[in-house]
Length: 114
Image 1 (cartoon, rainbow, N blue to C red):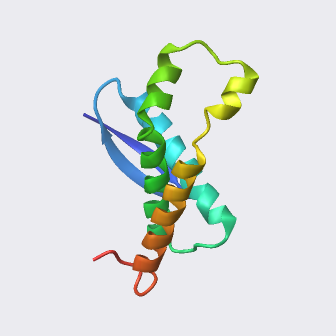
Image 2: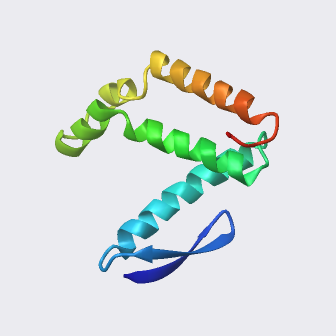
Image 3: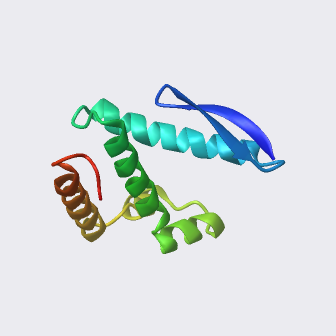
């Protein structure tokens, strides 16, 4: 098991990583860092723990789209007109917005889920 030092939102972390998994870990760190920085840069949320929870939810939501994720891995690149329809539908966006609103309400008092 190797240890890899990474930075997420400017803060350093020392993470354990299996042999040969460094590139995958660095890719994952880059995705988490980008997601968290995007939320932070929007300016509405300042607390690091709330940013982390929202980023985790956004990434999990992206991963939970099984048809889009699996089809993209095996299907040929869609034509530009078809690519526009591959984005999450209005129902998915509404569900995510509702979930984020509920999470924000739950965290609004003291910033902790439990």
